[in-house]
Length: 354
Image 1 (cartoon, rainbow, N blue to C red):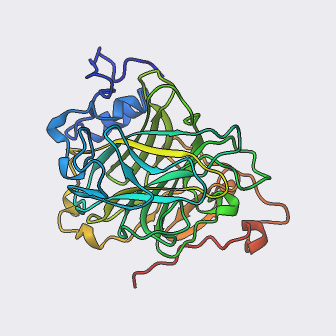
Image 2 (image 1 turned 120 degrees about the vertical axis):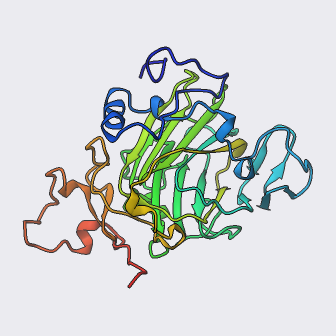
């Protein structure tokens, strides 16, 4: 990825100003061309405060240092606010903590920038477990999924630092995305693989430099990028079209530790409104009534997320290996896939709408 995003010598705005905004007035053809030529950094905002939504953002100087809450944000569990960071969990066993925005988000198109730090005394594979970013209907509900509830409604981005599945070939830390309408459970024993939409490896723990994550949701497309290599540029991680998320949900972050532990710190959360045109037929849609779902089978890059990386068609998850010609042993066209071919957990997301 080129260091100068967007082409044409777009200037950056300080440490956090990386990339040029894609303007909503571009035609679909130009958007597609820009996506193909310089996917990633060119698609992220430049951090222009004109579109920063302060009611959904958390930045220094923090208000309420030493307390258990602050304006617009609620804390839970082991979360501690200092002058330099919000610590979701300390480097101690069996801790859970979360921070949740009090204001529901009614933006149809948005971009979330998170400055975070995961660090601790544990050596390789002797630390855990990671943290999650949420855009969900539920808030302040502790549970087993990185300190928050399972069977949630909405979007989760997991930054998983510990491999629970001993047979996995993945390299950790690993970032993944999950969309849920409340009918799916996150399988910790498989590191959420059966309900994952896509993911990537990212060396984000115990870094001596700043680490960032960007999540963009615009016109049904979910993009996740990282800046964890101290290169001042975004790197592609997840890119999926066909994602449907309602408005009116809440942003949050949570973390949990078990027998292994780490410090999980949030330094800042910034939400930007994206000025994007929508087709006329969407004008009468009640965006608060949309059910979280994913409709496309592949990401815009035409890549599957591995043999068993799940994609969702309508409301049912199928093995993406079938999309790329990698068929499970014992399967042929016309034969139903049984549970043993799909893993240990059924992978259909039941629709909650008539």
